[in-house]
Image (tube, helix red, strand yellow):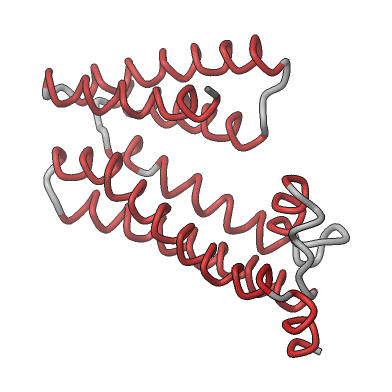
Length: 189
């Protein structure tokens, strides 16, 4: 249910753009959808994640600037700003806190199954940093190199596809450790 709620604002943005061809209208729709998303998440979970809040703030601030200046380029920077913010947070987690952020996230799901060596957690965390930097850079490349309609489609399909491929590759890499964690631990030491 939460995954659907998380994805609805982007779908609303893209569908509005497809049917109207009006970026300003699509930005207004996503701003409203993000407000509804925050409310729905609060009603369902009684909390709002920092990641969702950061994304919502960027949508409202950059969307508002784009509407005020009648220039969608500010809004097109939203995915890049969010991805690069995540890259900084993930990178900083190598030195701030007792574990890299990816380890905190994945072990909160299932600590028993996620027993990787410290070096593996750091490599995985750095892989996320690299992914976020790359995804942010490719978003800006598409935003400045292609027509607006291409960027809108990339925002939905391209960024989602990149994330999906990265998650599959991450899962394959993690499967080495989950298959025989003791053997992998000995290799890391």
